[in-house]
Image 1 (cartoon, one colour):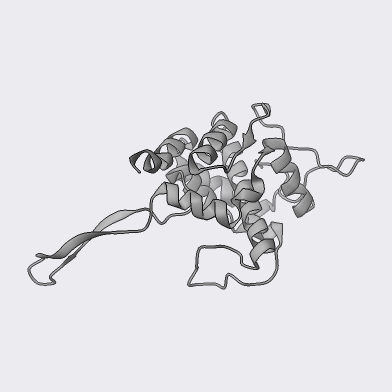
Image 2: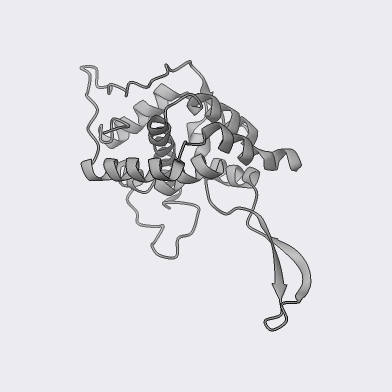
Length: 213
């Protein structure tokens, strides 16, 4: 278990952003305001992929296990610039939302008390708009969601004395990855960066076709 819980730490280090909060907020705001430029469409129907600073080396995303998902995603995104990494994490999140919606009729496996997860429309552009939290968790926490495992202790209100035994809430990074893989992430298994980007652009009809503006 100790090895598995280090999954989140390792991927967070590999994907961490410099001044991540500022870069994330500025880039997200810019993308939202411009609705991002569309990708150009080639005569054969494919979309012209964004020109990243590092070439696609053929690494495939693997969901064989939490560790495999971590290692492959880290290799795919570790050398990207901050804005490229942010964009790619949002693409991964959007694809996960989309496949989960198509397979299960639900927007996400994570319950949101402020909105319905069962809106019945599986739209990639909408999912991209919803992908900010996913990208933030992947970049800052190294996991698909924010339910970080922590120890809690009940205490008496007046004296502050502990009551009963400490207990754990949330779950570790390995469990977070397992939940995401089982719900929809397995649909991305075995695909290269270029294949993932092309699938995203096909489903969004080229909207959000570049990572920076």
